[in-house]
Each structure stands twice: as C-alpha cells, then as structure tokens.
Length: 174
Image: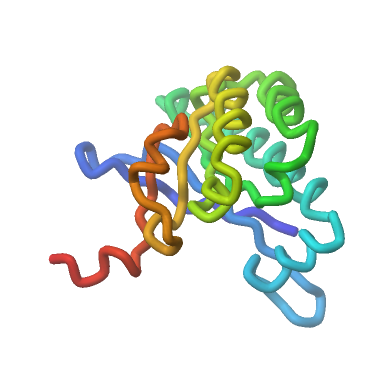
C-alpha cells in the first residue's frame, strides 16, 4: 500500500493549508488499485482496521516530517478517511491518540473524515464517538455529503468541524 497526498488549497490565500491522505494498493501484477476495489474486501475480512491504522500513522509521520523540514509548515494539517468498520473498532480513539503522541503532532493538525452514510447509520453512536475524538483536539468532517438521504438537521446533532459536499450535489451550480 502507498499513500498519495492531495493538496488542500485555501481559496482566500491561494496557499496549501493541508493534505488529504489517499491510500492506493500498488499490486505487482495489476498495477494501481483504487480503494473502491479493495476497501470493501478489507472491510469484510477485518483487514481494514490494521490498514486504517497504518494509513493514520503513516499520514501523521509524513506530516511531522514536512513540518520539521519545511519553513512555515507548522500550520499544515492532514486529513485521513475512516471506514465504517474502523468507527466500530473499540480501540479507535486510543489508536488516534497514540499516533498523535508517537509523532508529536498537535491534535489540530489531524482531520478525520467519515461519510454521511456512516454518520447517519447510528447517529447516537456516531455522536458519542465523535465527541471522544473531538475531546482529543482532533477535527472531524463529513465527506460526500449529498450522496445519502440525511438532512442537514440530522448532521447538526454531530460535533463536526466541516462538511465536504459531494461534487454530484453541486455540479452545474454556477
């Protein structure tokens, strides 16, 4: 597995403010395999938990390296996607805290993303877990909003820092 980092640019300053860590599987025969193909298999087999932890730790390690070697990079942050299976893992909050501690990262430098459908599958459980994550100082975002069937009113119950609206929802809005 390998991580690619998609830059996130501030519209106000036109500067890179963070990165989204995107995992890919570099298969020796099939080439680059996208998450859409391997994540469902990893979730069914339970391998998504160690894979997700590796993605989290590797993204934190890379961010710390950039922060230490690049002028003015202390304010950079990294975004990591979580799977629904990871959200149910009993050690998730502990693993997040361990990664932040091990790489000496400020919690504000980490943004965790979950999809709208994961958040709405069990809103009460999601709210409890997200409160625990937020208590660490980590930011939380809902990704792909507009692809599910929830209303903004439901999402208001969750402790979110940001909402990423799916492109299909806003395509052609101009």
